[in-house]
Amino acid sequence: MDVRLEPWSESALDLLRRINTPQMRRHVGGPESEEKLIARHRRYLAMPATGRGRMFAVLLDDEMVGSIAYHQRDWRGQQIYETGWNVLPPFQGRGIAAAAGTALITIVREAARRADAPHSLHAFPSVENAPSNALCRRLGFTLLGPCDFEYPPGSGSLLRSNDWRIDLRNSCQLPGE
Image 1 (spheres, helix red, strand yellow):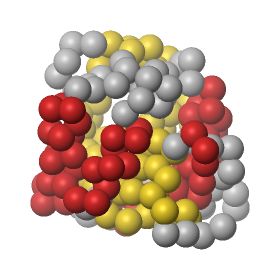
Image 2: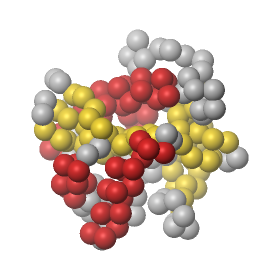
Image 3: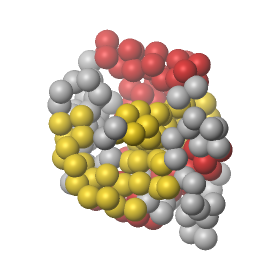
Image 4: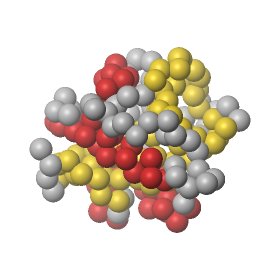
């Protein structure tokens, strides 16, 4: 299985639309309007220029089958990296998210070497999202516990999520090693 990450590009807008369904967005407040989707796409395209994160399309062979990202944010008074992912339903349960997550953790570990970079990577899946919580465990995240998590940022909308963390300083071990 050839799973790889490709930096977000104009061609990924169609993927974003395929992710924007009631089933795919049920744990994060539901589908967005086309206007909000375009704004999200523009933010994803601009992420690399900020130096604070990056969005990727997840490719299986040459087909876009999901997305994964990391970005810097404030969490409980500290700067952290946050990650999140999506894999389209026909491709779920095949190890694609785990392969993408492993690749992303390698990228984030490299980013964390900067002197001013955060030293932890967090994921905040809904407490009801069993597959994403299982993926966090599989990727080597440590469960810190449930929390109220604002999503999207600045919306005032709180989701009941689990806070999972990887300390990027203490381990060079990759998931499955």
